[in-house]
Length: 443
Image (tube, rainbow, N blue to C red; front, side, top):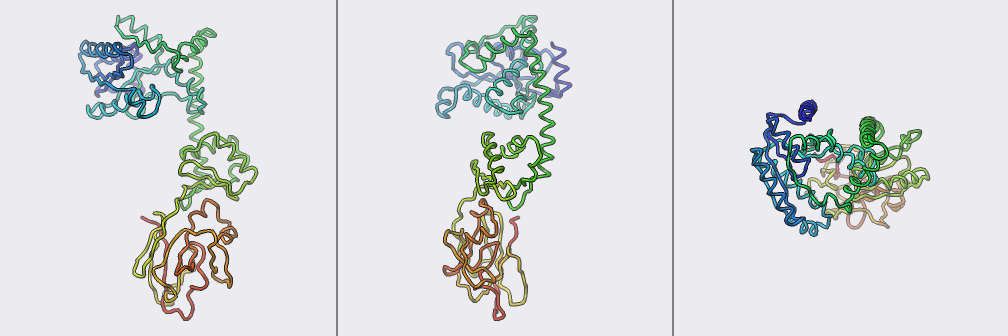
């Protein structure tokens, strides 16, 4: 096993004999064998041990054993005692999760302070299979079959290709001592149940069953990598990003297979869950225009021709714009400059900007979110129109309506920002000065 181990870590560039590493050692078979393998081949290592105080005197005996092991191997050792139960209660999490968070947080801190090149943990092939099965039982998708990686962040797992049987064989051949964690036999823990109940059944069915299952999972993992490669290309081709929104046209979903997976992997980073995807597809099929799906600070809107994704917009406080102000910002995304011009100096008919008769304005002006019941006289019309009706007529998506602002003067709306100014405040031949509001993105 020693030579296979060395070939594995060199071939896959997991370890470098010139570097130093921190080895997590519990005192159990796997971590003892890992430390022994590394020491025999001259790797520069230090040992880290966590005492979670969960088994009384057994936990203290484990700590003493690891300290003695480090002395035999001639390496330094670092230990830490945790009040795991208190942390569990404080964070309202399971005991196993509490131990995990405490362990990896300390490992990261210790790795950084010692200047080591990573923390080595002794997860092996049987652990990998248990992880995959647990992921499947939790209802995870294709990535649940990936299991643990050999390298992730500061954690490295050099024993992943080796079975528990191989590791025990090495232990016995070299006469190594180790400590048994009595909690490993308790099947109240899901992982232990898989280890002691499910895997033996697979081996009873076929002695090579677990190995064949892992082979199948590895093939599916490779297929998953191919899927994500093509998924990224599909997203770049079909999702349009504009003005803070992501748009997926319905046409992109016609005659495409795997719609549920495509939409899920597009939305999951925004906190959407797979259970929402079926409802989203049903809403698209039934043309439920205006229906919204929420996830934290994100909203997915069923628009007329696309799925529209954007952040939930909190109602901004009104802004006062004085006569001497040079500009203002909207939602931290767009900046407007305010300039006083002479008549005829510039003509700008873009609805994103506004040119108003300066002498008809009473300062300060007020910029606020539009409200139900708001009316204005759109440029070119001689009658008032409700803003709600104007937005409907212009097919403004529901998700965008919450962001629409109005610029007011003395209680009158002078500009529906980004759409149209009010007829009463337009520039006329008699206008002497123009108040010009020009939009540009914040840099």
